[in-house]
Image 1 (spheres, one colour):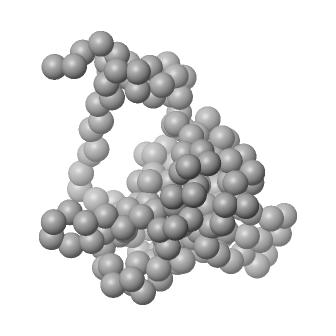
Image 2 (cartoon, helix red, strand yellow):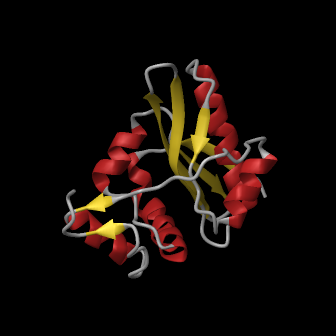
Length: 165
């Protein structure tokens, strides 16, 4: 198969949304492909779709973030239809790496669920390494209920609807 990555365009929304829905459901995540989200990521220069036989086969949503020391390209979603399309994921990671390098950004971080074995394998194949860190999250107010609902009710240990202290 011949899979290639190209910059995300707003017109890609229906295909991306379908992939994101399946990916989010498979890993108990919130969806990330609302209209405003895709418009934002389409302007970052670090968001891509993988195209191949049958159309769009995956996407990555990333942006450059400055932490006070140096910029980092951070990808909050790297997805292909579960159980994962290695060729599409690797094409996306190569495009992301090139976009970061071309922008003069030499640090990249890609967040994938621990259960996403295909995503992890593609990252390792493209010479990304697991960072020695665990990410902790806390969601407050109505966001807590939304996150818990996306996780199928899971996550009650780290979402608190009424605790603001």
